[in-house]
Image (cartoon, rainbow, N blue to C red):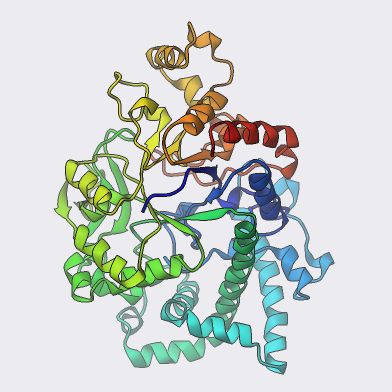
Length: 505
């Protein structure tokens, strides 16, 4: 479906300021929404909200495609509910945050977990005294994924975070009697994790309502793949291409060599058994979309081209070079999805190696694709990322979470590209370009693209140190955060508002 002309800001909740080392759904999130509204923005785009594992990637290393990340729970809101006392909210010490612009997961995780467990103890005590209908309704309505997820996470901890296929064989292969015994043995840990999910989605629901009431829609994100060591694969091994003996991934997902990497990207995720999914009428995927649309207004599909054909690499390869393209269900999948869920408010991430078949699939369902300004200036006038080549049904970005910031890009890009940018903007030379971030913001907002999404880093004019992710480098990503809501000044808001109104966003 196409969308009315609008603009918004890209910011993951973990990048919000807080006293506990990682952004959450508390006061700073509400202040950010106020900034969006005051600046005339109508969209808040986030990354996937799931609980993350190794290297904390919300795309490739999450423990569930359905669950929320407990690290985003606002502790201050738990004080308001009476589950914590104010004096128990000890901020993460400055010494544990050697760089306040970076999430220190090694420190933030144990810090928040200790306090969340204290809140759970009080919640458990209250449950022992009287029932909680809201909690019971949540557990029942979300049981299709919740029961597997909370048991999986409890087993993962009990097994010292070893991958599920190395657990006791009867549990790894989900023998009913073994699962029943583990549910009883780990019932307190299971209840704790149900509590975390209940509080996460309770807080998220309130935050989304606050945004919607201010005429701001949440753009969520569905990553096409899930982590092998996740409740999704453990609970549904038949829909993934696994080795039947070891239950390891038989093939690994990724992409061949591209703009980001000369050896391609090897993501480490198992690929789907689309034939098996077809037999189920794509039931798991339908439930995944249904669950996501309970909590967001628009869905951005990451790696959209993987629904037409996907790149798979045999397990054991060190790079993604020696892979192969395999056809995926394409139109049949989206037709089945639409028949079950109705008109789909979807944006397609159509970057990378895009074929006419991928474009045909995208256009058949009227999904807007993406245009990235940082990709626009390396070729000639036919470059599809140059604004004069845009069509209305697209989403324009200066850069995405995978790109450098506009300032960082400008500082490292080649002289020929800089000269191209300067001429395109009407300047004599690159030295005349004083605020490349605002030049890119203006190009995005002024374009004919129906939607424009601006990374907050570009609005703040930050350099490479504020980059969220570099796909060519595995360690150290997904950590950027801004240090305080005082950076979202009224002057900045007014500047963005005037430009937004000028271009009828």
